[in-house]
Length: 389
Image (cartoon, rainbow, N blue to C red; front, side):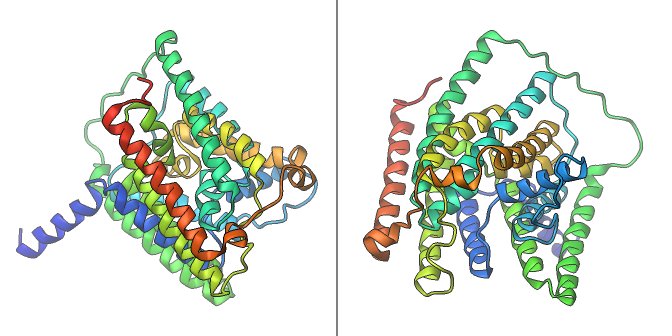
C-alpha cells in the first residue's frame, strides 16, 4: 500500500470509523443551524414530519383538502428529508447501515413514544429542535419553558424505564447467523454512501435550473446536519436523560455550548435586519411546558428525540422508523383536530427575549442560563446527587 493510500485510509477512518466528539457536534450543529436561518429557514424537524403526516392522511382519503405544503419542495419538508438523507448517507460511509429489528415490546414503545412526541411537539410549537433548541436560538422565551418540560418529562420517562427493567421481561431477538458467501456489504457501503452524497449534490444543483435554488441549499445544509449528528451520534435525549441515569453530562455540555453559539448567531442576523425579530418566535410558554413534558416522556420511550429518531431511522433501526411514522401521523392529526391556531393563542403570547432587555442583555441572560445548566450537571457528575440509578 502506498503512503498516499495509507494517509487516505487514516483520514477516512478518523472521519467515518470513529465517532466524533460531542463538542465538535455541538459546534458544527450551531454553525449549520445559523446558515439555515441566514439562508431563509431555521432548522426544524417536526414541521417536516407534519407535512409527511398530512400527505399520508390525504393519500388515504382521510383529509379532503390537498395539504398546504408540498411533500418535497417546501421549507420544513426539505429540511427533514435532508436530515434523513444525510444520516442515511453517513451511515453508509460509516458501514453502519443495517435494518435492525427490535423485540415486539420495544416496537410498541416506539409506537407510543412517537405518538407522544407528535402530540407534545404540536403543543410546544416544535420538537426538541424547533420547540427548544431553535426556539432558544431565535430568542423565544417559550424555549425555556420547553427546556423545563423536557427535564421533567425525561425524569418521568426514566422512572418508568427503571420500573420496566425490574418488572417486565423482554425476550431478546435471536440473531441470525451471517450467510456465507455473497456480497460483503461492509466493503460496498462506503462506495454507495459516496455515490448517494454525489447524487444529493447533483440534485441540489439541478434544482437551480428550476428556480428552486432555495430548496437545493436547504437540502444540502440539512444533509450536512444529518451527517454530523450521525457521526457524533448526537441525540438530545442524552442531554436530558444521562445526568439522571449515569451522571454523565457530556451531551448536556455540548447542547448548552451549541445553544449559546446559535443564539449569538441568530441575534446578529436579527439585529442586522436580515431576518425579522419575531421570526420563529411564535411558540407559547404554557404549550412549551406541557408539550415538553409529554415530548420528554415520549423520547425516553422511543429511545430518540425528534432529530435523533430521524437519524436512527436513516441507519435502518426499525423501532425508530415506527417512532418517526407515528410522530408524523400524531402531529398532523393533533394539529388539525385539537390544537388549532385558536387554541394555541389561548395558551400564551409569543415573547422575544431581546424586546424586554435588549440584545446585549439577552445574550448575557441566555449564556448565563446555559452556563448554570452546564454547572449543575457538572456538579452532578462529581457528586451523583441527581442520579436515579
